[in-house]
Length: 198
Image (cartoon, rainbow, N blue to C red; front, top):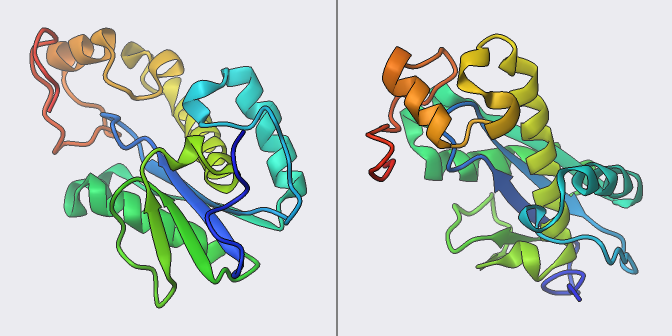
């Protein structure tokens, strides 16, 4: 059973990102502030639930959360500042958009660039430990998937409607055969599919 949040003295926003390991498209991030007695047994790390369940959970999160926000950093910005900094920036932008100001941030992962003067805690595997981070992971993932599906028709050869920009064999093979689309991250090297991506 996931705990609600990391601490209980300050208003806490859980933060997570989606799309960090993709070859194309933006990285998305979400920030979520849940009410004190929030419970949702199906809620977990977005990678642990089905696509259908993710969208069902998104509807509940958006209805029940005290505040939530989603933001992104596009592929061109990623190439300029690198994917790690882009992930942090996307989280900052999501927190910027919250209608309720948090006093504390819980971050999925082991690194973070401090947001203003707010205290924060990095938690490895936090999206499988705390409901607020899990909620952020669901929103970030589903909104990013929506974006990739929206642009998939422009470049059907990359199979984004299935891989959502992640480095599947077909995706890599297509890049090696015909090159990058306007949405690809040019700083992400794509080698022979039998070798590592980065």
